[in-house]
Image (tube, rainbow, N blue to C red; front, side, top):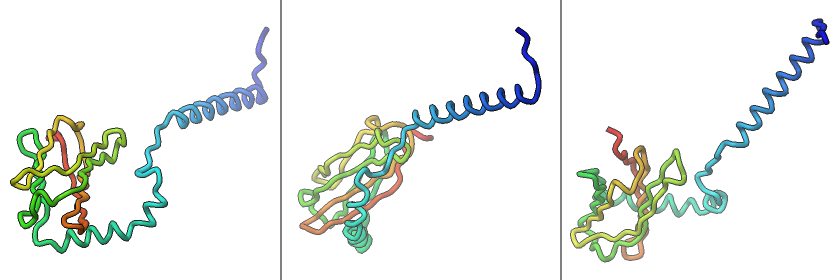
Length: 151
């Protein structure tokens, strides 16, 4: 059987190629992994004023939490005017590029007001360190970037 090449055959081949291209795009789109920052973002948005208040409380302090990356450990040094036993809350290592790499720790400051976290628990790359803590019933929030084994 011999194929007759004319404008109709060209249109048919063009349509078939276009359909294969669209099917390929749909296949790739379905395989993509979409991570939302928060699954329940709407209720959290309604409570955002509390977050703003916590950040304001932290900014008014004379001293901020010191974050150091030394010798394979991330060392958080809490304010010296707080008693370490009065500090409670959570430390979150938020990974913007991969939700599965987020890690949370409870605050357990030692007697000198420091908490040490082993760097090998984290993947290489950028994290945003989010410290949400309370001292004597007053809430505070501080965040900053942390780079793990980047350089």
